[in-house]
Length: 635
Image 1 (tube, rainbow, N blue to C red):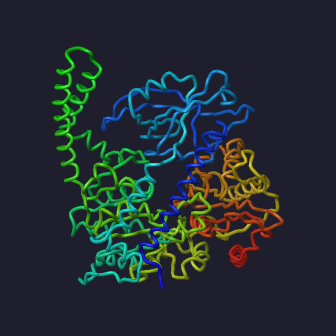
Image 2: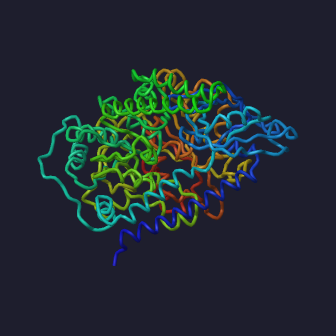
Image 3: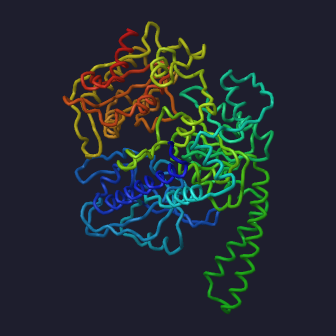
């Protein structure tokens, strides 16, 4: 007998609790036992910091600007790399710490003092960050610090929101939330409207079918978009057409970056978007449709700013009686509330799309709001609990993504083995195959690169668009190549990851030979872009260091991106080089066994894919044996 929906969700909650406990313990260990150098190297801390100006932003938050050194040198004289430079993102919670005078500039020795307040990243770019503080007292505390640093804090707020959402859906007895729970996690059929299909001549056949399925569904639909198949284009069209039938929709994704991407494409389509939360892609175009910028641009904002300033001035002033000050503050606060309400009413009335992260859908600005349709992009990367935060506001749900690519990040082994990484999208795909629309024409990869992942992950259902099918960089070139190495992998200097020195050198030597075949002038003139991918952060850091230190790469550095598989999700390059690192007598592959990661890595390439790895280690697993055999066939 199949499990009941409530039992499934109760198990999800227990696994989420295990993940929360694990992450909390890891944070405690990081805070208490990990040195500053290691934190900087892992990308979870900035140290030392220089404090800049402080001011109140449009949301009346007190913010402070901080800047870190462009180069951080360890006490051993080595330049440190942050393995994950993008870990500090808008919306992330952070805590400040300081080091007493007995320690040195590198964080060695000396006691660390952690301040008891939690702050939030408002903006980050390169080595500059703007952080929202909880109070003026917090600002005074960090201004008095001897040596100041900032560290990522455990995101307890998002966990709280996920637990609340799961509790709501588990306990729902009647209403739409209870209905969606039963539909999603049982064999109950989805209901559909029966009007004629709408034609979209600018979309291909599978994209048109997907948009129509979105319009027809009364409950849930899935747009399954393999790499390069135009998922975003399809989703934008589905949103646009839905807005011909509804006044407003909610568009969410797990990450700020994914929200920014879909929001920007909707703006390009002429849709009025109101972006709630902190954008990652801080461009003029992005800022123009953020809540903050729209709020500041409203005609009533000047008066609101003056009222807020008057309130702060009265608090700071000691003149007049206490009763008189309280009366003035009360009147001014009432006026500020009225002004803020009027501005918000105007902004939300004008917006056709409200765009935010899944956790951001719980923002106080959206309290009490309901939507006919919720679109969740990159749904295959979102925990089910996070999806329910937004689903509580919706009557029907559209999921878009690819469950054959990267899953949500799970840190707890117990939660991983228990299946916490199984997403709501996967449940729908398994339980409601008729609700799934597969996009089948891909526009990214030449056919030789596409065919292997097509057979391995998509049952051979994909086809290459004519304009990309036979394209390449060089005449008489083969689009896929395996370069053999046999160096032994070892721990990185930080002890955080695997590295393979011989393979790193071979990777860059192989790329250099390919560059010399193309020619420097053509590379620079045509801006041939390259991605070097490794599943291991240690190898990424090593490759970045080699490229930075070798003069040969100086003219090409702007063309080359080196990152982990996760860092390349959603991106593409003309040339992709994959350094697989693992080389050992035991055939131990670690998380190279997660084939979804390899699917992402392979499918980033447009015209040339070079795989570098030790066949004797890797090919003990059937997947890599088939990959090597496929590449050999092309030669």
